[in-house]
Image 1 (cartoon, rainbow, N blue to C red):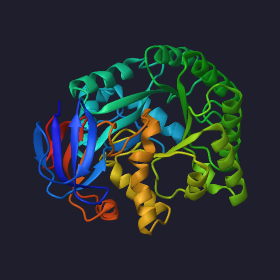
Image 2: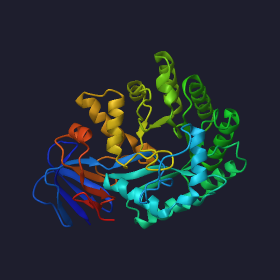
Image 3: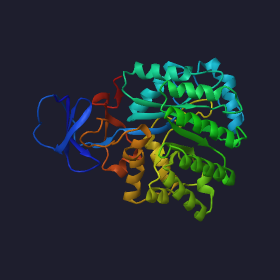
Image 4: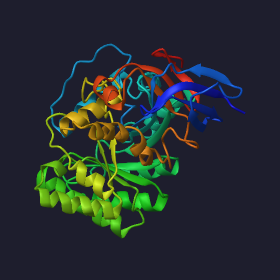
Length: 395
């Protein structure tokens, strides 16, 4: 049975087409014509159609979105921000199911239908953050698909008991566990990585390691991660998040690391922050190293910035890396959609038959115009369900 027929849209800016949706999936994409079959008919009005956006790196449990403004504080180092967050989060009710749901609604408003979210797991909060995120997802009736990375923001081996919490989180359904600056935070990269890889192998989950360390210190940890990935059963299941050091290294060193990442199946998640060195994205694309784009934190105790729009993050990636040609600009949008499928364990994420019916309509001339203007999302379907219409949330 057909549920929805989205008529007269332009997939990826191409010829007008009708998209037939059934059971939450795209059944067919066919040239626009007389409205086919039964089901609810939605007139796309000739708007540009894109797949739903994928946020490959978020922290939806940390936000104070929907609460009164919180002034930024704490020292600007990684450790300073961790300490400030730990001191202030309880007073703000973080983690909160209401704030988490508010953030997820903003993601939906901007067309993001799938999220890979790091969720803090530490000695203070335990596994409560994971429970909060799951509660928020249920409150939205599954309109946004959220994968959970159990994330040790306060360190791993320097906090005895955290590895056990990560193990319990993996056993309870987290699809990945995280790590954080094995050298500069735990000051024992071998011990942290040994512990994380052991849990990941035993529980059959992925690894996603935040690496802020710069230069050679960062490169050294890339090599440790790649080596362990090659020696374990985790090929294709390890992600480096941020990894600022890669863009700072000499070109020949960059290339060797990119080739090694490709061999190990290590992927990269970035939020393309200003004032960081561009990644060697062309070499990464050539060698098949996946790059995912994310928002990182949204209005949290680390930063007051962010509105949840992954298309603006794609624009930031394009500007940071000097993308200008039509092909390059389209590639930035692909990073936020089709090319990010693996970050949320989807075999396909596109406007094609068999894919989940996550569809975004925008009033734009083409993909490139949509990227540089980031216009309002006129209509958003998530799993075939209308969650945004005329720019307004319906969940």
